[in-house]
Length: 412
Ligand SMILES: Nc1nc2c(ncn2[C@@H]2O[C@H](COP(=O)(O)OP(=O)(O)O)[C@@H](O)[C@H]2O)c(=O)[nH]1
Ligand SMILES: [Mg+2]
Image (tube, rainbow, N blue to C red; front, top):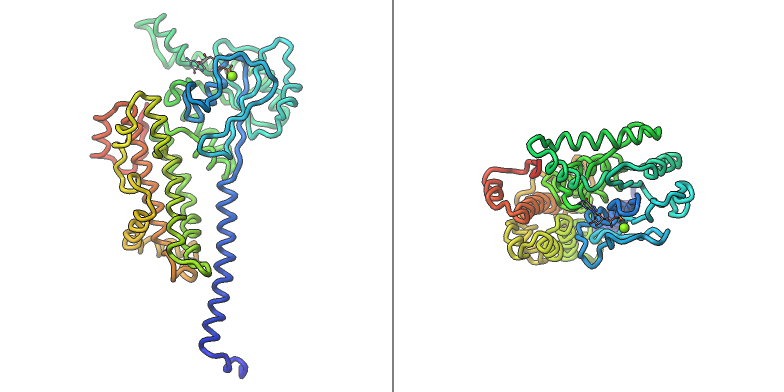
């Protein structure tokens, strides 16, 4: 005790600061690791099926590309090699789609094929089939199952079936019964090959917003583990209000880590509030990209939908959507600080270090509030852009007038 009394006030403060900065470094490193494992989670999706079934077209659609895009997988070509070709997601290089060789030949050997394409490197397989159900896709599904891997069965080109039936049946036409018939046929054929309760999705790669695509993405997201689910949801094209909402919710689940890393960066030794602003800007820019609101995504969408990029851009109403400069972000952060007291009391319960560690830097609550509300803004903008792209100006106006954050399907 006597020894302690000899420590001066100044020494005590220095010791406290040293301990605090060590804790800050430790927490910062842990948060960094958590974010790293989330953002670098790899997802490898194998797309297989017979030649001409629509594998490459489906891959392009999942990557938000049309066949004419320079990075698109070539379509309508005969496959000649046995080598899988990898197509990274344009915005998320950790999500890779693999265009596997066709399985059409009569001498097709599923096991040999799976060895050749190094089946173990994929998280799951999508087997694409079109028109009449043939034997090879079912044999492949059996072999995939035997290797303890997952597969999903996509029946592609249903737009063609629907069109043909409409022409044939005229007044008697019912889309629902055409789809039910195709589904029943696929399931029966799989059962014939002893594959019970297979997941079958009816899709058109030219109209991802229709048919079973929503069910397809919900099912896959549900069955993937946490980090891979996040990567999968972020990789999906913004084709419906429901997809946009799912993306938003997945990003919201990790806002607290982002906010904490931002405010820790402002109190690390030798750092200041100014160090945090570019970090916030970077995070907001990645959100903007996820919702397809960056210039290159807007140009791509405008091109696909025959609109002008400027026209789509005018559907972006939020302040953050219009300008993500460091200067703007700093001013929005200051605004957020004024409205964030309720967040602070809420988050202190589950992030107890927050109050202790970051009293000197960017407030956790302000960063949290800004990121959270920006996600709401981007999601709303993204829905408006989608409506504008589809030429639905009237509905866009009514959405502005009446809707809050509610998720509702644009296409139903
Ligand atoms: N109508 C329609 N045509 C499709 C669809 N998917 C693919 N195709 C067409 O089917 C042909 C073969 O597609 P492709 O993706 O090259 O098949 P792959 O050999 O399995 O890679 C191309 O002419 C595509 O345009 C679809 O969902 N609907
Ligand atoms: Mg192909």
